[in-house]
Image (cartoon, rainbow, N blue to C red; front, top):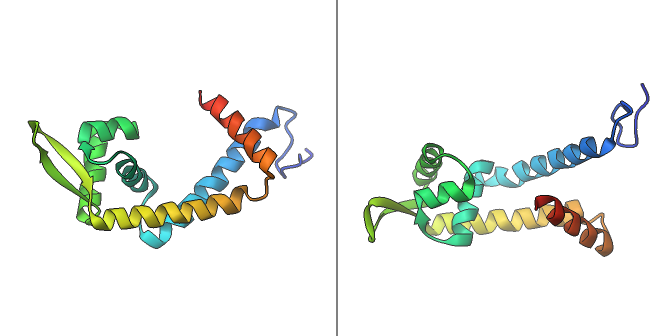
Length: 145
């Protein structure tokens, strides 16, 4: 069996999916490395970034943004609250609902994570010229739907 240009065994099929998943793995690995100094998991980082982007929200809204079940969202928020990154408060418009918001420490961590991720992205995608970056963005937006 010969190797293709990516160093993977050539099985005679379309190399596009293998190349795509290889790049995705590299991005995930870089993302985990960028989170390591802050001792925050990718799922926790996603929740913090959603709260950064959208502000205080109900647990149910956070579940929708994260595309996870409410029970899992509760666990994520519990863990973030233990670390002092988020706080819960009663919803003044519905006493049955709970609001979640970032603490000052959560906002600080979010800003640091975003800066690290931006630097990692610049390094990773820096091998592409401007035209290639524009084309890749166009293609990814098309695939995302």
